[in-house]
Image 1: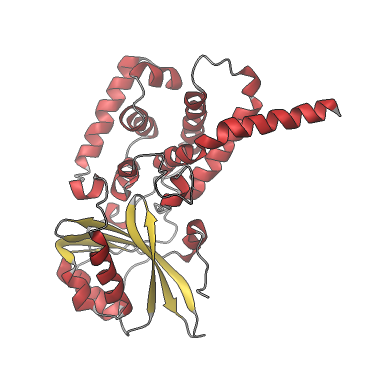
Image 2 (image 1 turned 90 degrees about the vertical axis):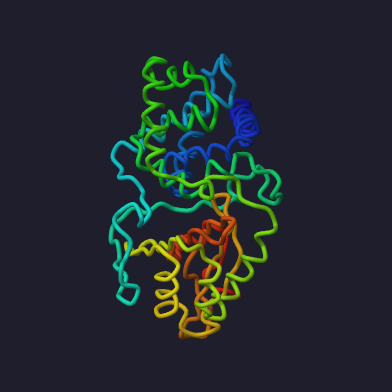
Length: 328
């Protein structure tokens, strides 16, 4: 009985020490993997491995650093036999015919959004974000997926987590020279992605609220013209799991007006926050008169209007956002 009680105490103490790091470890694994589901699996794997080897932890590094080592290696193993997770814009040119059918991307392991609430130390307190929101911006996560796994890990550890090159070399079992080479190639790869400041800077303040309210109203009122006025001229619309995507205010407005916003009242918009960006959970009126989960939209808002809409038309994401499949 004493042994069982001691083990229980040890487990409780381990949880007390490690639970404060779960949110930032989830963000780290998400940057590596591009999927909140895969990231949650690897955080769980990290905690299992850490618990099994906790007796050997000698404290030569901080507990936080030790957990990051385990999590990074877990993600690298997970990436060995997995394809990268793209957005539609990473697979081909934009669509030229907004009046035509959108093509589905069957079997593509799409990039997923992550709710801001999952990377808060206290989900009930929006002020307790434990990681930089800029490091979770959707465009940056999409660009990271194009890097080889070790380059990805080095870039995140050095530029996001601010680890020293020697620390990263120790984790990867290589030299600081090799780490610096990987970092240079990773930075060059990210630069080639052509990210704009609107896509990677910290999101704006409450002054965006009026624009977002107008966006939601235009969607709910099926007012494609009003919605188009909120878009930048060079705006982009993506809709995974559809491969088809559109660039330019005119084509986006035409597509939404003819194929999506057909009648007022068909959609109900519920505000959400994902990847440090504003967004909406979109419910669609069904034949049964109820409003069913349809899409999670993540918006990139710049000074001149909405620069990008990524509409994840995947109802299976709603449980991740703690949202019901049907509005009550």
